[in-house]
Image (cartoon, rainbow, N blue to C red):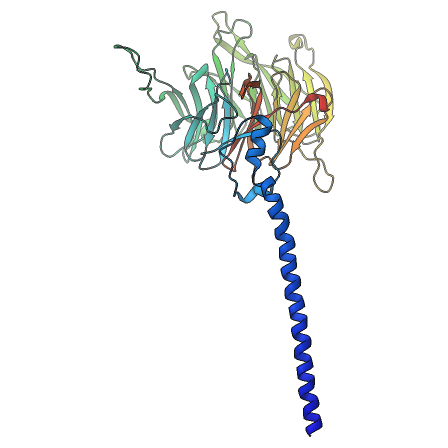
Length: 437
């Protein structure tokens, strides 16, 4: 028994030693792995977490909005990303530049419209005017009316959609100017339960300068149904209604000169109407003008060129088309397709994706596009990709718009692109170099 017992004890001891050596080796390996994971972070932190300082040196400005300890600090900062307008407490659903590009208005689901003063796109912080909408409604879209002191807001509530026009009250200066006593914007006109309680998809405005137009701002509200309504920005008067008769709308917009209204809807054809003006400058009627036929599937978005003579369309058929609408449609002359580009955006399986939003730069050279949270810039001459920000926001992009004019960026004057998102942020982007195409 003694030899057997001693053998058993020896076996237990040897087994314990082997187990100890194994677990010690395992623990040392784990510790080593943790250290190798941690070390790159220690080296890369200055790069990752010093994104704002890196941004400062590149563009000679700082970004106080950036958070060094942000959870997304491991994401690369896109070189075209100039600044972020924070302070929104919920999804940002719409934005609009003032005609002089000095102000940027945002609509947020927190019930507030904010009008940011863009004195310098590189500012550490931006002053903004806060407009609280009436209780029960939240803003979904904004459009400036005439100038930066008045703005039209589309609001959604349980009872339906409303339109409000807010205008800044200029203080009376009987005994000398009192610049500090600026009064808050007041509601000048309002309409409720418009579009038969259906949601408003888009709200856009243009200054009517075509023909005998009197220079007033014309606002177009597009419902999720098939109707579109035109409004006089200053007075709130209804100027006309159109029905797309295409099951449901995707969006609608007015040409920069106020001549045409175009809608993208459920079908592949784009309908275009002409806003006809009387000799006194007022709107006489809205009449059918032409249809853009060529896409094979629904058009998701469209935009006009700055001279109002071209329309750019994006479709679920995977293509972008550029149309010449400067035709004598009264004589049955059809609009012409100038160019067709394939959408250069694919998913992981190689399938072509569609664009959600389009916005053409003022000089007509760069087309900004979005799909989900991806932002892409295309060369309008060649259709090639100039740059892509795959995660431009931490959520879907809801609206994009180029500044109509240049704004200050340090010592420069630049045109910027603004993007809004469900991530509660608005970002300002520089334009990519067209030469890189």
